[in-house]
Image (cartoon, rainbow, N blue to C red; front, side):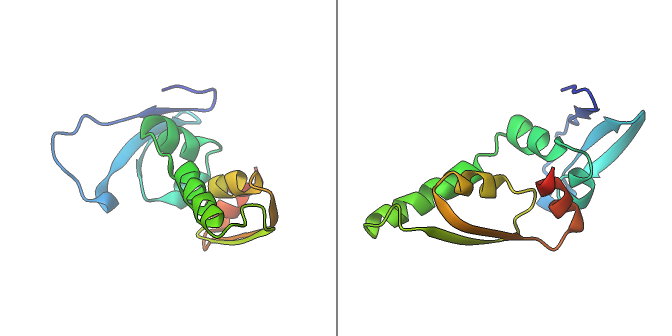
Length: 123
């Protein structure tokens, strides 16, 4: 799938790979590069690549699913609007935080070990 800044090329694979071996190609700034799907620092360095690869190509629904489960638990407790405070460990580029923010969240703090994640979240 092409965008204005990069193109993602998925390999034709007949073999099953472990999660840490999965990869795709990205053409960015005139260069073609093989990127492992778990190399988040490299993925976060290209604006929008994480969302394009994980959400559009792989159909990732995690942010919505996680937040729906959180909302269900809050409703079970009888306090769906009880001033939610969230500490998001491994916040990555902030996709879950964006959904939580819309849940009437009083305080949201996201942390991640990768500086590239912070930069991606700030974008």
